[in-house]
Length: 44
Image (cartoon, rainbow, N blue to C red; front, side, top):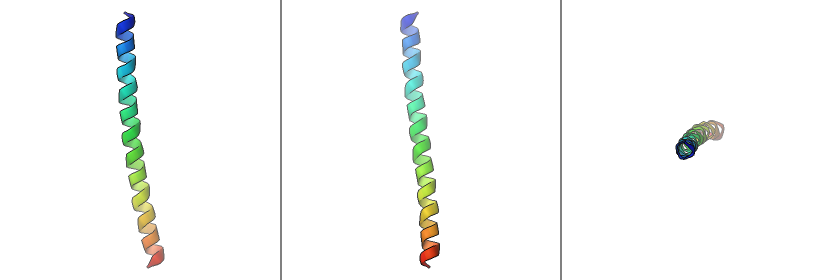
């Protein structure tokens, strides 16, 4: 019983890390595009 819970916990943690990593990359990408377009607008 404990082994199953441990494996489930590890799997959930890995999935959570992957989701957070994906979300972080997505948000930083969006922010980079937004700031670049803003800088381009200001520079122009």
